[in-house]
Amino acid sequence: ETGVTQTPRHLVMGMTNKKSLKCEQHLGHNAMYWYKQSAKKPLELMFVYNFKEQTENNSVPSRFSPECPNSSHLFLHLHTLQPEDSALYLCASSQNRENSPLHFGNGTRLTVT
Amino acid sequence: GQNIDQPTEMTATEGAIVQINCTYQTSGFNGLFWYQQHAGEAPTFLSYNVLDGLEEKGRFSSFLSRSKGYSYLLLKELQMKDSASYLCAVRDSNYQLIWGAGTKLIIKP
Image (cartoon, rainbow over all chains, first blue to last red; front, side):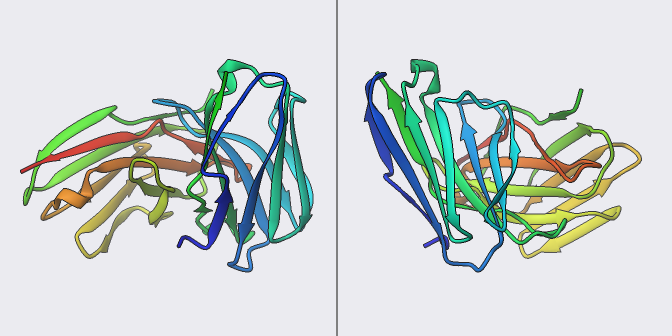
């Protein structure tokens, strides 16, 4: 148990489907993040929320839509994805301090067919 | 641009010592993190360095030289369970985390 829970663990979807990834943290952190992890590439930051407010959107295509209803929950809504969007999507949380490490969930392995 | 360099893959023997290097070129520096990630699992925090020198935590140690833009993670008395990817990340002057692509460590008996 990592303190950050992501569902589902695996997801296969067609390019016309709509699906959502869910993340929940039980650590009392005030910042939450979505990252994309592709094989042999650095983690790519997608979105950051601080105290439920989005503070970063790293030029992510609009087919990815985040939602943060409260400081413990984070969603990533997926719509009309492309095969190159297949990757591991990691949620993380942290305290809002420079020396605070990120705590990651186990990720959702997404395959777009 | 900003860049973090780590070897792609390393192999070591059970019981031995291995050093994983990380060099960085970033706009400013506000700390360096090491994470461990087992296949199919979450990255987990190992260490944080913000001042020069060596930080020791049991079998794992992390070293930082800010003047050289260089860090290493030292793993002693290697165990099979240490087979994993090791990720280096630097916080830049804007407090953004810049990540390396990770080093896959393979431990052989």
